Length: 119
Image 1 (cartoon, rainbow, N blue to C red):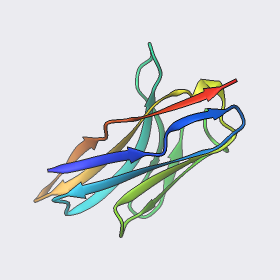
Image 2 (tube, rainbow, N blue to C red):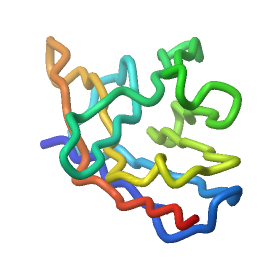
Image 3 (cartoon, helix red, strand yellow):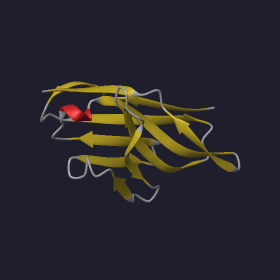
């Protein structure tokens, strides 16, 4: 079994910063693309940022220049540094990863961590 566990969410004032972490554990052969998604109440889950195993990154337009995704392959972790937070960044943030278990990759989600930005 593979688990993704997020941490680092919380309440912050607009303009503040938070750093989310996600740890992968279990019977992991290797990890491909990792990413962060978010879902605000009444909205669909949306992509925030992704990072490949060699460090290529991609961001939603709404977070470019404010958020930075990174990963530590040895520790099987992915991070999301969030700066200049806005009230519209309030959402549950989910970690996502393509994990090779035995001979094929499978997609996994974490349980989510709440980020609330007050104005």
